[in-house]
Length: 173
Image 1 (cartoon, helix red, strand yellow):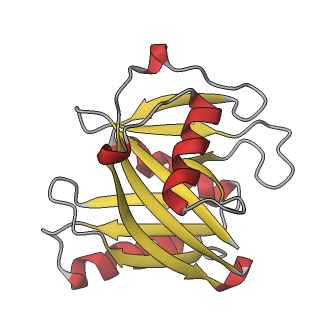
Image 2 (cartoon, rainbow, N blue to C red):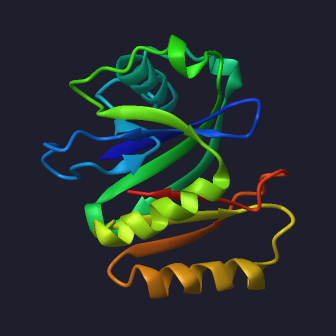
């Protein structure tokens, strides 16, 4: 099984986060990046583009979509491809599908810290910490330790993202 996540990034450095409906069968009310399964016959790139279009009405230019990482997730017996997508629309121009998402909003990286605490409260199962090019492995391991202590029941993955601007990108699912 292959799943995808799409981190939609604005030109101001904010990320478009989506909240699942409160009646979602697996993760009610969870904030996350755009995410979905890869359907038979699709590539992970076409899947993330389809998911962004279906959930948000976002028609992303494939040239502005970059594979960030691929990981194996033993806990859910799947592979997870994570993409970064440069935003081409303002939030008010998106069409959030209420059957798929409760809401969507732009968040600056500092706001993601609040989501980590919420993930712990909601028993988030996966936390991916992508550390940037200016972060040493030792510093990244300290961040991983903080999340391990805050979210003891979560599987925490530490990945070298290499992003030039942000110290950390944190995905909570």
